[in-house]
Image (cartoon, rainbow, N blue to C red; front, side, top):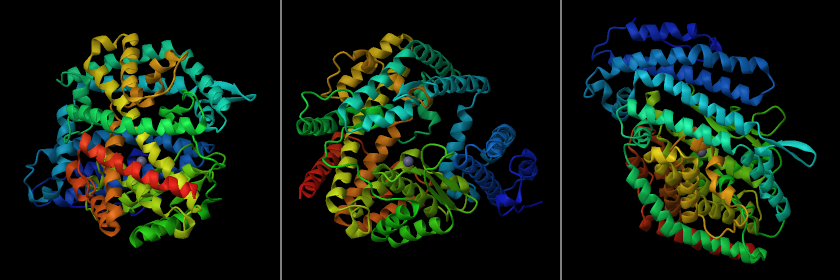
Length: 580
Ligand SMILES: [Zn+2]
């Protein structure tokens, strides 16, 4: 066989059995390969991967739409147990066949970054690390078990951490304090087990790095995440720029809130960075922008219409084709996400909307991810449609900012002008407040993984965290709660379960702010650049993707100062409309 045609839809196959996919993988493994048929072989492999990914996405979506349906849960488990492990082994064998070819082959001309990633994975691979990966994922799972099981009685009802966190946004300061204290007590009860768990994780991760011939786990993580375009030193520069350019702006925001609210000091329950919960100092009730999915879709469509007709057509397609499930209801999984269906080149958005402003923000964010899927539809091979994480979030975070001028009803949006201004101020303040916290999380891990001996002592971890906290998080009075401050690293899941994965959000936000800045002077060309950059998928480097979007891949004080000034100036103008 020189080629094969895969089924045109997942409905035509049984995706829960490895036997469904095995013959295609076997064909690809056995087909004699020459320069002449290499491209066809790649295309077939790509199509097969699309089928597999789409099957996986659909099974995941089905499960999250109805968590009570055991059959759907079982389909997901079957996929994880029966299909994924075999598919990984089979794909690894194909990668080896591909990497045996010279990268200068005509058939591989548009594959250079994809090949770079595959080669990197192959070089980093060590047989002896395989059992260590299993060990570390069990430890990571242990973190989820410990934290997922934490519950307290609140108003006579058992509530878990995420249910309790809801009250951190309450307008009543006493309610916030009570919620914060309840959460702090729960975490404190797990201090010893979490310290022990982290110590075990560090040991295994250190061993993984050593097996791969790298000096420490930081060096390993940078390779493993394919960070070819920036170094640990660049991250440290980013931290310094945040300290110099963002922290002073944050202090101005905090001081304004403190004065308006008439507080002597801000306390830990007035700002909970790990939850993005910054006290609301505005007057009036919480924003209630819409009721029900249809209204959310209609207003969002109106906003995209103002922005760019093609984006609004994409969004309309999603609504027409049933690719949006946006209202919360009993039995749905928590959270929100945008998933891709690579066989039909379509995105799918899942949300738990209740009609709040957060839901509007999530809608715009996930729509940005969805546009990425539409824009990469023309790329021939599935791996090319996979952009680096740092840029995926540029697509989504930019959309939140680009859409923000159209939130008011006069543009078809959700709000009166003063309400829209209030929502935008909250968004911009959230960006300023996030960056310093992001720096704490990142800087802490730079220390941990380059000081394995010291970091084995949890007391020194507490001290290292506290040092970064004092550096970046100003003007909150923690008197009487110092232990909670020092152990704040326990409360960030990424630190345990996704080491070093966090700075991506900071970098993307800097990219998004630049896209937005450009749109303020020339909206049409900013939107064109945004769409062009999205359409490149994963075929360009990060600096090239940023450049294509009209942004610089730069995280120094000068860049951050310029953007912070723009944010502050915009906030000041919006303040006038809130008051008017
Ligand atoms: Zn996102």
